[in-house]
Image (tube, rainbow, N blue to C red; front, side, top):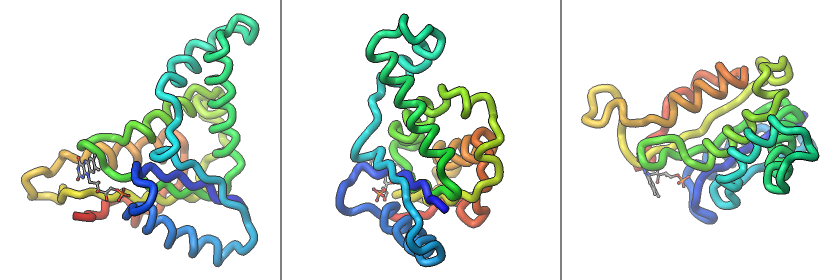
Length: 179
Ligand SMILES: Cc1cc2nc3c(=O)[nH]c(=O)nc-3n(C[C@H](O)[C@H](O)[C@H](O)COP(=O)(O)O)c2cc1C
């Protein structure tokens, strides 16, 4: 059993989402001692923002017609897809930044989604268990002045469940207010 974990906090030391995900990971490790964890620290070690366009265009070209940057981007997409497909369970720790999807998780998904095994809707990931930890500084609960301003959580749920096919734990569907 392999756990794939993504952290999108931009802070290397203090991070609420990372602390919460650490609790989840500790539980998973206790239940699966000795098993491996694949990690992506996309907030503190970001993927290149230019790689998405290079991967999209590069995928449409024969390998010998690609620029070095396009070839590197296609290979990066393959690596991201390999990491996902190799995992049996998934943990995403993604804060809300600037009312929208963190640019780092968007870049991760955009590059990943250029990969044919992912965007052709292959059965590999179908129904594998996933947990989303998302934290916010503000309160977006029904009836609050900023209800509807969290444009991250619903997008994350849409792509994790409906695009990637993961079985997202229902208890993580809401966001945790860290403020
Ligand atoms: C640059 C920046 C932008 C933020 N934007 C928002 C926001 O739009 N809405 C919100 O509710 N919280 C926002 N926050 C608060 C974070 O969601 C909160 O601090 C959270 O704990 C960050 O996750 P982390 O502790 O794992 O790093 C922002 C924080 C930072 C640093």
